Amino acid sequence: MAEEARGGLSGADAESPEPAAHWSKQKEAASGYWHVKLILLMFRFFPVIILRLVAFPVGFFYFLFSKRAREESGRYLDRAAAVLKRDAGRSGFRASRLSHILAFALSLIEKVESWGGKVSFKRIRFQDDDIGELIERLERGEGVFLISSHLGNMEFIRGLAGLNRTGVSREIPVNAIVDFSVTAHFNRMLTELNPQSMTHLVSAKEMGPETVIFLQERLAAGELVVIAGDRTSGSEGSRFLSLPFFEEEAAFPYGPFFLASLLGVPVYFVFALRRRDISLFSPYVMHIHKSGVSFDCPRREREERIKDLACRFALRLEQYCKEHPYQWYNFYDFWGGIKALRKER
Picture 1 (tube, rainbow, N blue to C red):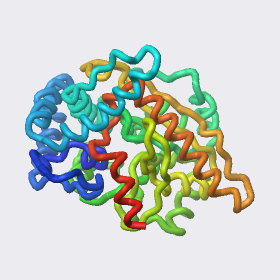
Picture 2 (picture 1 turned 120 degrees about the horizontal axis):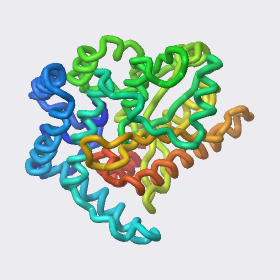
Picture 3 (picture 1 turned 135 degrees about the vertical axis):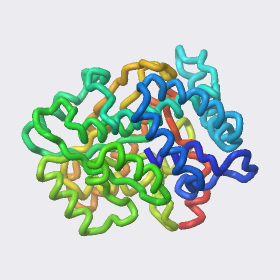
């Protein structure tokens, strides 16, 4: 959630005339802790419906006063609308920046709900996809590597697992790989909401041989490892993959897909999407797709399969972005960033 907020609506960028920086360079606002503390207090003393209602004036506030949020929302939505007009039956989509920002504000409240234990497992609607195979594997005590995104609510699976509400008969620890840079406020809130929430977080910036071995051990113990696959690293000179996305090349991170090649377990793509983009009581639809890419291959073929895995993920992400364009919360120049990354090479 913290990464999403930093790449989303930052109070520090209100009416900024400068172009958006890489998402990892967007700092938390100085007053962010008090905003987070207020949400936490409201969560403890008010019914959930009150928090959801609060999301609307908060979202409207950012729509009015954050020029960057409006610009980056418009950049993405205009592109999505142009592509959807060429897709049969989707020409009626209207690119509303306000709707996009309101959907984001509502998602933040729902993330807090998921960590605070106020989301019922019954609210999740699973599909006839690869969820059955995934559950069978977990029931056998075998670990799985999940690649999520900033589409929909990426915290749901972590929150539900942390509260032992996955639908599996045993407890499933989740090891989430996140970027801790400038996310102290949100980390503190998660810790207060659920003291176990910080137990299985792994720093993306400290990945090395020892971390890979640790994750392999966790997977061997039947646990989950989760990472987002739609944001490049902020580290200078970091590798990335140039992939087609909404009819133009965009930069996707190399790290998650390279890590998948090292861990030696099946890879699944997971998306948790609100059925109705802006609704106080919408159920969530959970999509689970086995990647179909295996790294049981000679070393010389590994790079090709890494690229194949990333391409399959990008295609799935684009598919669901087209179905729910208001639920992709990357409020920065996702396509323009590839130019800056190429200069760093």
